[in-house]
Each structure stands twice: as C-alpha cells, then as structure tokens.
Length: 486
Image 1 (tube, helix red, strand yellow):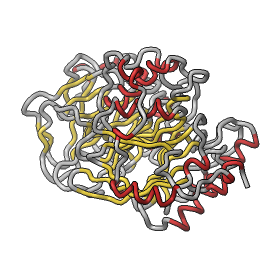
Image 2 (cartoon, one colour):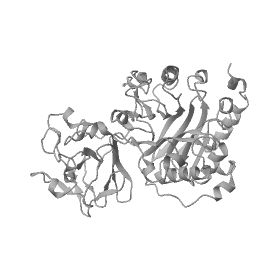
Image 3 (tube, one colour):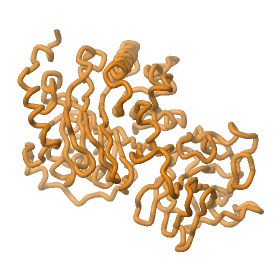
Image 4 (tube, one colour):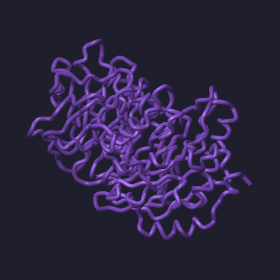
C-alpha cells in the first residue's frame, strides 16, 4: 500500500455526493488571496477561440502554477497571464495540469467571472486528498457554469499510481449544454510521467494500457473525453526509435480517436522548447462524430503574452471543438478546405486559402475574416455570398490568381502572410466567432507550390494532407482536388 493510500480519508465520499448536488463549486466558498487579486494589472488581449454554437475544450499545463521555487517565479504575473488567456480564449471547458498551490488556483477563479473549477485534491473529489497532497502538482478543471454542470468527481486508476508518477487521473462526470443541446460526458484530465528515459517510457506505456482497459470496461459506449499533458507524442515517442507509448489507443481506430494526431503528424509542438506534441485530446468513438474536423489547435498565446515562457508556462493551450447537436448539421456548413502556405517561387501573392460551403443553403460571408496566427489578413465585404456546394478562394494578391479561376479574390489587407514553417489559419464570423481553424506544421508547408487539402476532399471532418498524396497535381484552388469544378 502506498503512502497516499494509507492517508485515504474514507469520509470524503459521502461529502462529495452531497456537495455535487449543487452541480458546481461555489466560488465564494473557495479560499482567496485578496492581496494577490488586488495587485493584478490591466489584462493582455488574447483573441477568442470560443463559439456560442460549439463545445470548446482545452488542455493546458500551467507550469508549476503558484510555486515560487519552480517554473515562473513572479506568481502574481503568472496568475494575471493565466487569467488573460482563459478569459480571452473564451472556451467552455479546460483541463489543467501542474497546479501546485491551491490558494493561487482559487485566486485565479476569483478573476474569472462566469467560471468555476476545482483541483484533484478538493474535498469534493472522491479519494482526492489521499493521492494529492497540498504542495505537489495537481490536475483540475475550469469550466463555464453556463455551459457545464458537474455531477461527480473521483480519482481513477489508483492502482496505477506509480505509472502516472503519483498523479492518477481525475475523472469528472458532467453535462455539457451548448446551443440548446445537452450531452453527458465523462471528462478525464491527466498528467503522465515525464522524461525520455526507458523507465519513464515504460511507465507511460503501462499507464496507457491501464487507461484503455479502464475505459473499455467501465465506460463502454459512453461519451468519454480525455485531455491532458500526455508527456509524449502520438506518431512516435520522444524516446528515440520507440513507437508512441499511446500506440494502443492510436491504433484502436474503431473505438478511440485523437483529434490531436493530425497536429503530431504535421510536426507541431505543444511546448515552447520542445519539438513534439506532448498535450493531447482523446475521445471515444461515441464522441468522434461530434468533433469538428481540423479544429484541433495549438493556441500560440505567446504572441499576446509578453515573455510567455518565463512568466506563464512552457506549454501552450491545446484546443478542440465539438458540435453537440449533430455531426452533419443542416443549412450552411463553411470550412477551410485547401491552404497553400508555401507559394510557387517567391511571389507571396500566390498563397491562398480555399473555403467551401458543404451545406444545403447559401451563407452570407459579409464581415467574415480570415486570419493567420498574428492578425486578420482578409475581411469579406458586405454582400459576399457563398452558394451551397461551392468554393471561394482568397489569394495573397491579384497577380497570384491563376487565369480561369473566377471564384477567387485578393486578400483585403494586401497579403496572407502565411508562414512556411508553422501557422494557424482561422475563419471567423463578423462577431469574431470561430467557424473553423487549422494549425499546420512544416510537414504540410515545406514544399514549394504544394498545398494542403482535406482528405477526403470537401469533408469538414477530414485531415489535412499534402495535395500530392491525393492526386499528382500540386494544388487545385477553386476546384475539386481532382480538377473538376465545384
């Protein structure tokens, strides 16, 4: 029996059951550092990634949050920046990791009107304080009270405490209510064993085996979502010449789906100093049809937070979106379909972004915007309409539009400025609501003149791949991937 098991307090379970009848953790009842809250400065502006019509979920490791001797040392500034990221991103549900000081976390909640949350050692969590002591790294949840209500929470896989580095996952049963539709979801947030040595790799691998076995036996057929710092990649391991320790889940395609696998395959990184995707989202097959294809994103908030890695975290938030109402909603369905970031030659006017309306009705694009990771690059003028089943292409400049491509316009700002290494392309409404977004890495943008295209073509749930993996041609702006007209 481990030291934490010996410390288990049996009377927490009935307390948790009673407390969760209220469905949320009242912020007024949480401990607060009033002096700290009062010293916070003016907020940084972090652009929204949320939408009123989708369930927007993030995982974020907020490095040693609240611990002055580890990670960022200015805890007031770290709290301020964390507040600005969460408030600005405007997402519904966050799984957080590496939260160290409880009072600091409670002070963060005080700065987030409309949100509530709790950590893995909270009295509301069954077995919480038995496995998480006050000054160690903890996992937790932050959520919009208007979109999420809580039924219960508990620590799971306690028999695999060693495999999870003394941080067994936190499981929360919740109800998500977005756009008039409710879903019961089993939400799990975890923080896997770090490091690339052989023992740490084996512990992650065994933890993954235990996680799959638990979900298969306990939650078969249910809506299960797992987010967190997995501390390893999905296409290959951070341990040299080893497969991903999560290969058992990656390969179980009929039962599990990683929205973040496409980010791994694109060569993106979720940490500031590394070259791998360590932070992931995993869902069961019951939730997979609700995932909005291409919405998984490494949100590079370091563009908006000064000295981000030394003041806030060495991890970036990783986001994914879900449509709770339907996997194939009627009406207009507009999404990014083809992107050319690495123009032929050196004329950036040849960069382009193609959007498609796969729905059954036309959509008024007036005021919609296309942005890269830095700023808005094109705003569609009033009166712009995209008919059902049609495409519209925005090029960097007029001279880049090929002869015969009539369904194309030039970027209103004079260029798209797409990065050839990695970047994020976002389509948003006039009010700033994200319609679709895709983050790509050098694997999809390093070849001159070759675009990235949905596979299957015109499928919002399809992954982006190099155009040349689908057909021999390098790109097909304004036309289907096979060259035929929309």
